[in-house]
Length: 234
Image 1 (spheres, rainbow, N blue to C red):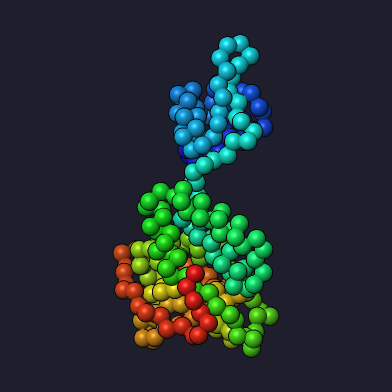
Image 2 (cartoon, rainbow, N blue to C red):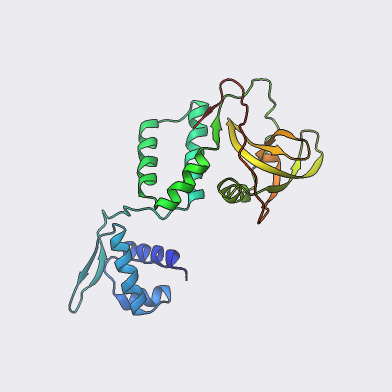
């Protein structure tokens, strides 16, 4: 079991069972006693309050008020939270905006330096604006879950992105583009990219993109994207 999953399982076990022992945890997660001791130390470093009571009838217990003070969220997970909140804010239907912003700020503050750098790189590419009233959204579909994962190397490492695209007329084509920005026009999301074949910018509705793949070893330069009035960075 990977370290993160094992430590999450330890926390769940402590919350569910109350008092337990190192031996019981080792059996539950399939690890050695030494590994459990290291995991307990790591969880304490992250802010979990774990008590150890010696002697017969003793063991380990987790303070019920204990929470993780540092975050193990990935860059993509934090970015997904931010774009979700940004899209709701742009649509004008985000309640408790100040609390949401405060919570995100705490998450960002807890990120390691390298993750924070990558997150800010992604945020620099994120824009929001209003959707023109004449745009038809009746055929809006679901976005491919692999898209956000592909965006991380595409924008951070500036790798070319290849995908299948189905346009408004139902015509399918294979595209290889330079991702330059993500544009949220609630409820639609767009990938704004430079198309080398057409030598121009193109807007691709994300719900029409499938099978996204980053091209390893490729690279491209950042370009200034001209946006319409009303579009602003996050």
